[in-house]
Length: 223
Length: 111
Image (cartoon, rainbow over all chains, first blue to last red; front, side, top):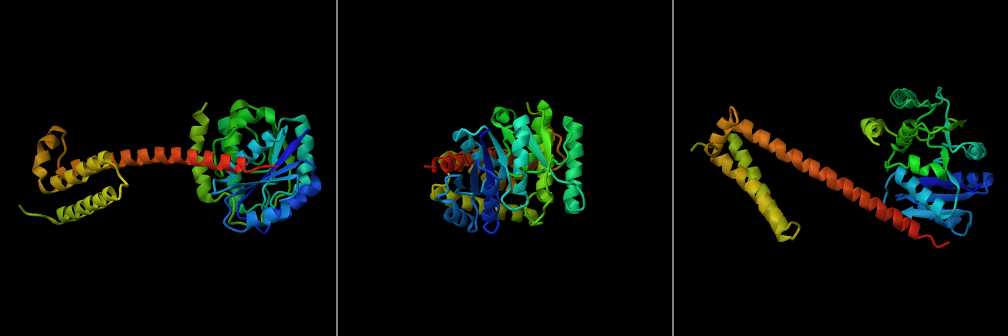
């Protein structure tokens, strides 16, 4: 199966190249990197490193649109390159590329594969509580049992993209996908990944969490 | 006619907004229809501010106790309408911008 590894990048000049190098060591699949309007040197670093690499496709959003929009651009490019599925991995080093094999294998058997981290003490307390709260809320509203709702390390096959295609352009994308999966009761597998937290000020903040929470009724009632 | 503090504040604000409106009209930031609509709003506020008796028949009809209550309700209605319009427009623009940026990114690929 031909897959594309989609890597959204935003202000990750220090870590993106390292993450992509690790990905390239572990897969022969196409790697689609989207610089989502970074303000630092991310694009310069990526361009100078992978400009002539045929396995890597570099895309740039001229302004920052958000993770969800960057993921969508990656998916569009993957389909354009005739990929059968995609795997998303964050560029900040919080997703270990060593697990890519597990995702690739799981996608052979299932259309949708989510990663899950252990919600133990490795995870910052506020994020652990937020994640547990979201897991239970989604379970209650959408009858969806997930071990880690906010994990951005996941993949799916092309045939189910229409079912889970998200509208959210910012950080609510994982929750929106979970809602769609729950509503349509799409079967999925979960793959254990490492719990790595590098930058505590990046990713979903408490304010983003509230915004996501306010969108839940809309996702619940929407067709 | 005695003028109280609150009337002075409202008058000052309304005149400031009328001047701001005039500047934007001169800079072609706003069309003639928009200019007239905003002029009626701020000019109307200024007029009611100095001649509150004009709206008294409506106030009695609508069971408002004071003119101030009436203007507050009207102001909230206007603000809510503007906020809603802005919300819709911003969402539309965000969507258009997202499509534009994403299409540009995809089209930039030659290999």
